[in-house]
Image (cartoon, rainbow, N blue to C red; front, side):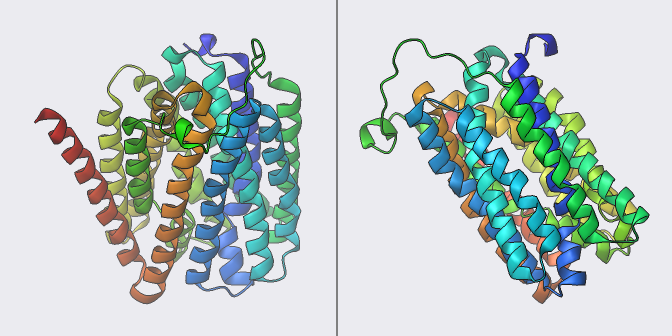
Length: 390
């Protein structure tokens, strides 16, 4: 199966890997940098993280629509990765929280610009029979970057005695490498004949987005409420007494599990019903939240991170595959965009609520909230399956 996946999908995976190394070197330390160096509250961390991640997902609506209108995906993908690479120095220079927020917003705008066109490009390149494997492969390579980044951050923090800003400067290098690889290695499919440009926002086109598609959008949004920013995993590890230089290993551990599971589960999604896997993904997140809420030792924390990583491997590529399967070919960018808009709004709400709950009621209550939203998602899935049997 791996040999049959198009070369450009492999390259897009490595592009994601290098950008994630760059981003996670910063993001695995950023909550600690904000709280310990800049004196930021946990609520403010939630505001920054929620606003930034929501911005990325909301911007995907417009970049997805634009890619459908132009019929060109690679140009917007390059622009988005380029923005992500060029914002990295701002983190190293940031003297106050407002500058961190600005850098995060610009970085996430770049992510938003590239996200929907890249996912639509993967769909365009890959045969329908192996879409799950293709999205799973890209997600696995992306997640390898997500654990190599924090691992490098730990090594450099130990070597340089907790010099956050020096680590942030090193993160600029893999970001620039990802842009160069994308420019050279990815070939966009040639268009046959002259494509008629359409305005995806017109009702006559939007009504081609089916009920099955909007069901995926709704479930994805409710599910996102349950999985707030991973910055709270980092803060939970610090609360358990893990030394600052070693805290990024939390993200290493979680992303190792995520990376190892994403491709196998993606491949599995080409063979068994998507909703079955989605149910299991929700159950894994519920277990993770309960363990992180009740755990009083590193062992419990590790178990919670394990199930968090499994749920990511089960669901992230799966939801992308479900969107791709439910969307018309000429509206794929728009479909990914609307999906990410709703998920982005949900993530903003989730991170704001999580930060407020942490400051006022403690970390345990924050993860109990996540568990509650997981149960809500599971009930929606079960009710939908029951209605189909009636």
